[in-house]
Length: 60
Image 1 (cartoon, one colour):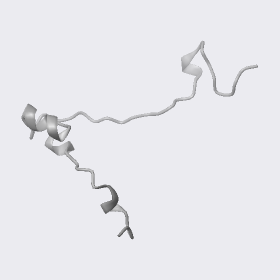
Image 2: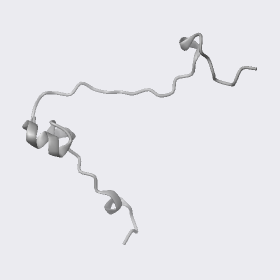
Image 3: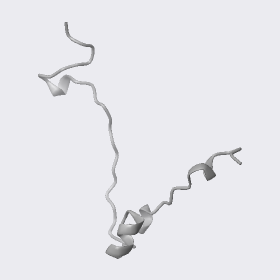
Image 4: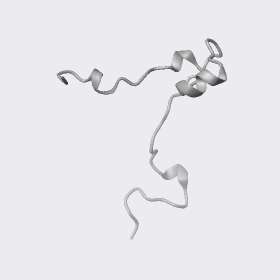
C-alpha cells in the first residue's frame, strides 16, 4: 500500500516541500572578515540583531 504523498520514482510528481525566494545580494557595505565573523554576516544590510522577548507585546 502506497502512503499518501510518498513517491520514490518520479520526483516531479511529488508535492513541493517548500519554495524560496532569494534575491541577489548586492556587494556593498561589506564588513571586514573579522567583523563579519562576529556578526554572522559580511553584509551590513543583513545584520539584523535578534531582540527576542523585547519584541513581544505585554512581556514584562
